[in-house]
Amino acid sequence: MHKMTDLSAKAWEARYTDGNTPWDLSGPTPELARILAAGRLPKKGRALIPGGGRGHDAVLLAQSGLDAHLVDFAPSALNAVLEASSRAKVAVQVYRQDFFALPKLAALQQSFDLLWEYTFYCAIDLKLRGEYAKAAHALLKPGGIFVGLFFPLDFKQAGPPFEVSRAEIEKNFAPYFELHFEEPGMSVKPRAGKEILGIFTRR
Image (cartoon, rainbow, N blue to C red; front, top):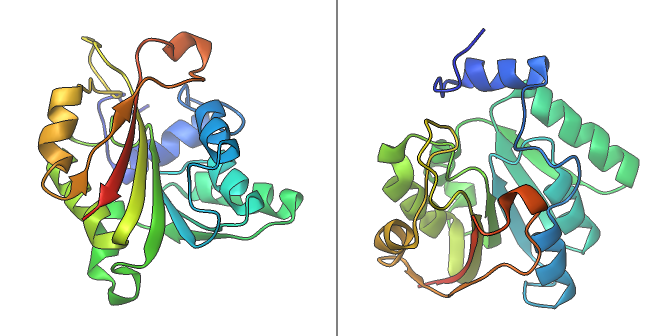
């Protein structure tokens, strides 16, 4: 049994094998579907999802016409991605490794048009949040779009998830992106009022 505060790869895999995945919505994120339908995201190109879990959102992006990529280090999650993409008859490229290793791969540097963030930023070590923004900048093309549904706001319990705030997000991302924030239009009910949507353009 792994403590929820254990952020190791082994612990994340155990959460999947034990079915202890309260962040998993068992389907695509409604807010992502909403902004896709509104035409606010690229219609083609390469999209990356860090810590993408079972791949519900990756399948949605692939179905929308994007070349979907997902990184996670839990084998059980990645197996679920491949099964889901096969059922949907779409392709999703998976990477079994630490997200923070991706910018070191020359082939992936400045190679993505879109990065979708949901429940990964809040699950990593707080000390790595600045590095996350830097890594996203390194992986996106100039002018690329980072879309983050940041959760949870005003959350004082031990994590993960760890609390996020607009001020802290601005501090980490402003050196690399033009920032735009808004209220999400379609949060799932338990998270309503605890999320903020960020649509950032890579400098």
